[in-house]
Figure 1 (cartoon, rainbow, N blue to C red):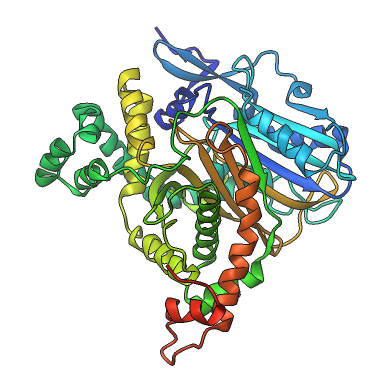
Figure 2: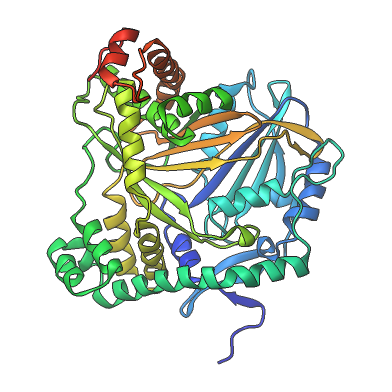
Length: 485
């Protein structure tokens, strides 16, 4: 029987994200943009029509059928259902907005229509806010951030800040990138075929995986390493998540200060931010009376596998790596160096391609295999962590200047925490998404983030630097009055 011409076959990886929806963890990417001035609903809808709907995919809904999943054009598409206004109760400040976003993150998108919505909050803090919800099956976080940026302007009345390349040029660039893309995709599909052939037993049984690795390639070796990887420390962030979620975000830090501190310590902006996140989580756990000595919190970190030439294409083209955050280290300099070492150890890893292969297997194989693979991945981590370097110039959306922005990717399986780091216009933003049953008060972690940065900065400034430029963590902590650990 020929394929219905109104339907388009969904890729294996996109299908995996469609299938991963759970009542307690919805596969939804959520973004929040804040403005100090009002945004008009009519102008916002017209902007979406002109720049968002240039992607035909956003007029399509996902359909699961016996032969697999498909994209199907919605014959009753109505833009007013997808771009709507709302008002916050009470003072309409940050607390009220965070509660509203928390509610939306736990509310599923209707599969009867294209799975995306923009919610325009007209009364936020004297200005407005825009909440974007898009199902992960449409694209990964990097692609969707690029789509959102394509809607922005360099001034209140244009021109576009990040216009798309003309179609002919984009096609030439895509042709040049196709070789690299094909190699990455083929590698991921190879891993996926291994997992389909051998089943989830490879990830569930380290001995079987090790035996296969002894006879096989680098990919099978990586599967064995993943199978042997122990779970991270049993903290209060592990457990069975529920439907209710909580979001919170910090005041942005000046990016120049973070960069200066990183250069002084030989670390990246990401290293500095993750070290402060680890410190804030450590203090939160300690204040709850939980043990923190020797504790490690492992995060799944998305890694972009999409060439820059294909940045404007939808779909999911990313892998995952496992990053250990050293919660057990009190000394802020020592903690930063540990984060830096853990990040460095992941360079050149096959983990991202392995993870993409796992997702391909999940989208192609039977439900039982999908559940087993999802469990094998998610039980080894406690959080999903994203870091996106955004544009460093001010941007405008529908005539209003974007004051700050942040976004969260979904937590798969039973993972109950999402960490978001995003830089924009000379500042870097830290946001947190938690399961309400596991961490009902993420604002307490957020509140300690800034002071952790200040402590690291003070420790670095007060230290006596040796000639070789390598700061001794213990001496630095003593000089600043911080007790190392």
